[in-house]
Image (cartoon, rainbow, N blue to C red; front, side):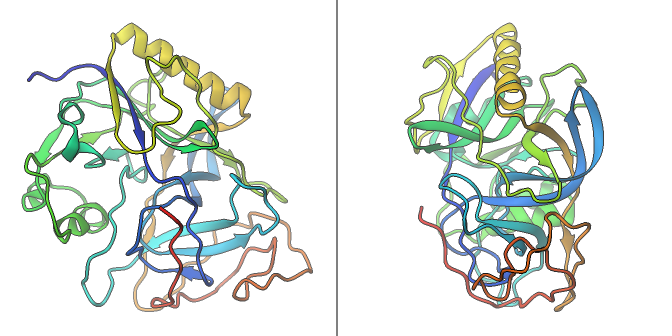
Length: 323
């Protein structure tokens, strides 16, 4: 079948990871979301700005907990993570990250593709919303616009994709270790960047610039006609044929709901997480929140305080969030 322009809703598990200590090891349980801090570029007030910002996303390798928000309401983050990665010493199975939003461009590599042929036949310009069903709403963490090209792959052939080494380690090596593989393989899509389409549609994550005293934000709910989004969709992807004009109008509506209604910015380029060697620590780039005197009981992390110079205990266990 030829590639087709599609509007795609992909639900993935919406629970927040619940780490047990100051570092969360590479996840070997069910997928879940993290509230993350990263440097990069974001669009706010109609201008591109550089600096650190926070966002909701998927990052299954290791992360360092830099703030704890125990008093936040449901739907708001309880932990702030700084991502990094290090290959586990045992070489065993671990979760892959998809979509991957770090680096020069976003990547969509496998999620739901084995069960839905339409997801392996997306034409350039297709619009993919990654999000979760929460409290009767579809809340979004990643808006992915399919860029030019696409590479067929399987778990055994992913080494031929000529990806950066860190992408191979974070995305494709975990896939190759999975117990079962889809018969039809996968397709790797590259997200369209803002540099390629300054006026849109381009890929982004809803985000908030770092500022003192911030305690995060809830993922924005996206409300569109049921032709496009089913709020109660929890598992299978929904792919709907669309024209290029419809996709542009839908992207505009999503941006309006993220920026004008939710008051967020658009994260358009995210720095690549660093690779740690041994128990080397990666310093915090800048404080995210104001220090406070009251301590929480969370594994030595002080409430409202960013941790400076804490080493990575690589093998510290964590509790997975519910599926």
